[in-house]
Length: 183
Ligand code: ATP
Ligand code: MG
Image (cartoon, rainbow, N blue to C red; front, side, top):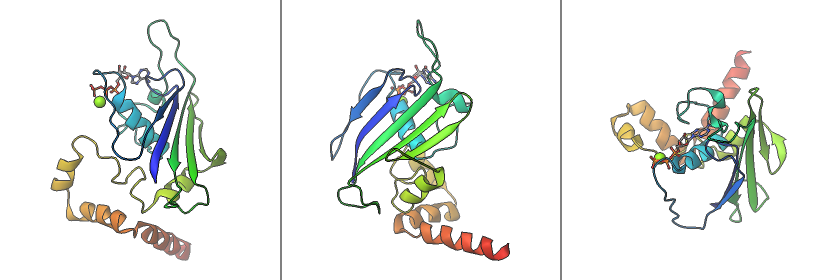
């Protein structure tokens, strides 16, 4: 599986709709400071369900929406889609191409889609659990994260090993079953 394409519209500095194509293997994004390189990784995190505004380098929810620039009005909606090649069926879906979309309006309304069909944030989280791709996965390593790993507490470090080993899903299910028993 690999990331095939990212489509952005109204997300952070990307007012116009753009498509960024990737190839299997190593891809590099280069550009001057402030040109939007990190905004692209923010977009990928966001579509994978990132809820932390701080992680997305903003201070409020609507900071992901294009805020306007010289001669250009702010936009009312941000939309990001990622297209994954799933021809190896690493993700347990029959589709060989998976498109995940997230949309947010200034009103705060938020939507998720899986191959154009509306879904819940939870469906996205479950789909990526134990693959290392989810928002807490190890597929996105940001600045400072290596240091963080080295100084983290054993319990925190264990979470990363568990995600890698693929037992997070079972842990989540166990927790849910326990919760149901308590009710
Ligand atoms: P560096 O090389 O310094 O890391 P970069 O290419 O990673 O730079 P980004 O951090 O992705 O750059 O982009 C920062 C730019 O995005 C800033 O100019 C900022 O004004 C712009 N930006 C961020 N959020 C918004 C928004 N909501 N609306 C419009 N522009 C935004
Ligand atoms: Mg950057």
